[in-house]
Image 1 (cartoon, rainbow, N blue to C red):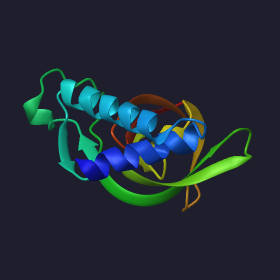
Image 2: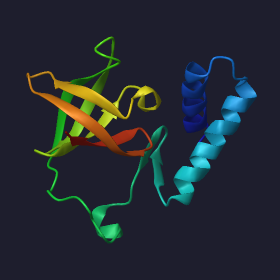
Image 3: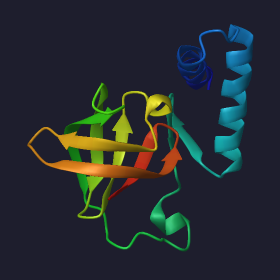
Image 4: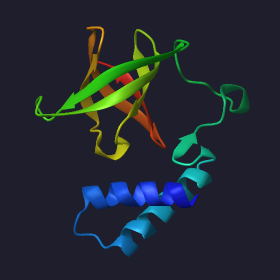
Length: 136
């Protein structure tokens, strides 16, 4: 849990450079508490995941999302900023992504897959360091 706290506190400090280390750690502890309160499992340092589909009722996804592992780039701020990301699951309507820095990833962006496809995305959910996006 210490590694996860340190990871989150570092991300908070990068986003809010004037924040003290103690305040960043307090924010990290609050985030970890919220993750656990939302019934997520901490599976390994730095990774939170929702319970498996068979563990939670009411799956809302319209299409099954086959697992893939592809490299992509998240492009935002009118094309002036970008970050690498991994595409974990992919369908015609959306994807599950693992960006390099989930806290800096905006609500809307362009996803450029390295094999040429481009999708405009809207973030639908955030869980730990994973995003669920809908293609718009």
